[in-house]
Image (cartoon, rainbow, N blue to C red; front, side, top):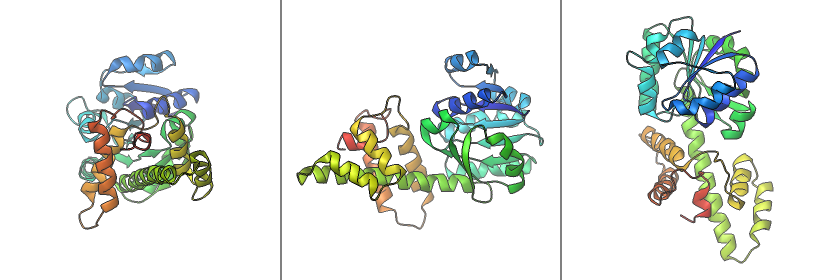
Length: 283
C-alpha cells in the first residue's frame, strides 16, 4: 500500500488525512502550526519535521496550503517538497493557487523529471470529512490513471481537464461562478423580503428552481450560519483575486462586483466567517 504525505492540515487537508487513515494507509503529516497535528497523530498519523522529510518518506504527496505564499514556502528551499522528491513519487498540489505560480511549479517539476498533478478540490468541509471530494485535475493522464486506485479513499469523482495547470484554471472558474451565484441569491432574497414575500417559502421554492447544489447551500446557510464553517470569506476573496488576475482579455463585471463585496466583508472583520455571510450581513 502506498505511503501518503499531507502538507497543510486545515479543513481540507485534515479530511484527506483522516480518510486515508480510515483506509489503513500510512500517513505522514506536516503543518506550519504543529499544534494542529495533535488530533491527527492520536488517530494514527505520523508527524515529520519538514515538507522535505514528508516527500522523502511518502509515495504520494499532497500539498493543501492556503495561498501562493504558503505553497511556495513548502515546495521550494532546502526543506521543501522538491528537495525530498524523486521521479518515482507523485506530487500533487490541492491548494487553490494563481496561474503564474501553478505554471511555474509545473514547469519546475517537468524539468526535474518529476510526476506532478494540480488537483484542487471541491466539496467543502463535508466532502473532505466524508471522503466524497470532487477532484479537478491537470497533468498527464498516465500519472492520474496510476494514482486513481489511491484516490478512492478521498473522492467521489475525478474530472481531468488536460495539461498541468488545467485543473487550477477550472477551479478558479468554478469558485468565481459559485461566489457570483451566492451573492445573487442573497440579493434575490432581500428583494423578496422588500416585496413582502415569505422568505421561507421563497427559499424553498428557489431550492427547486433554479435549484442546484450552490442554491441549496446558500439557502441552508442563510437560515443558519454553519459552525464550523465550510469555506471562509478570506479564502473566496483570495480565489476571486486570482481569477481576476487571470482575466487579461475577458470583461468580468460580475466577478469584479462579487470580489468587491467580499473585500467589504473582510473590512468589516468577517474574514473568518463562512462565505455565505455576505447574504446574512447584507453587505
